[in-house]
Length: 114
Image (spheres, rainbow, N blue to C red):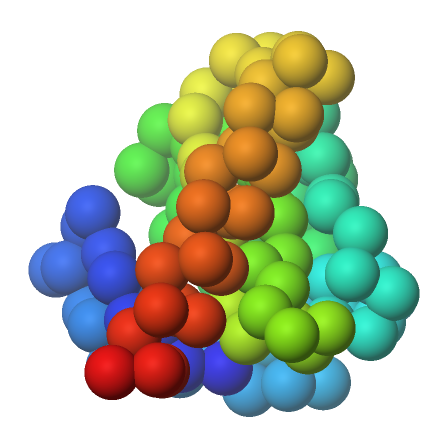
């Protein structure tokens, strides 16, 4: 998976990659990419279980994560990742990120038509 945007480019540069199967847990990949369902990691333990770079994530003050697949024409074309301090998010925030992801998918579809 290749990063196309980063709010922390020094730590996570655009164009950086996470290797499928080694840098993220297989169940996260299946849920996000194949089943197209969001992942809500409420705690640092959730982040630790999913991501090989969990120590770096924690060093940035992040211990909670919402990952939402961006779906266009039935395919997962990206995953929107939103991170903050442990306990920062609620289930309502997952719904908000899903709305943002739907708008992102619409932009991807429109750009593909140009």
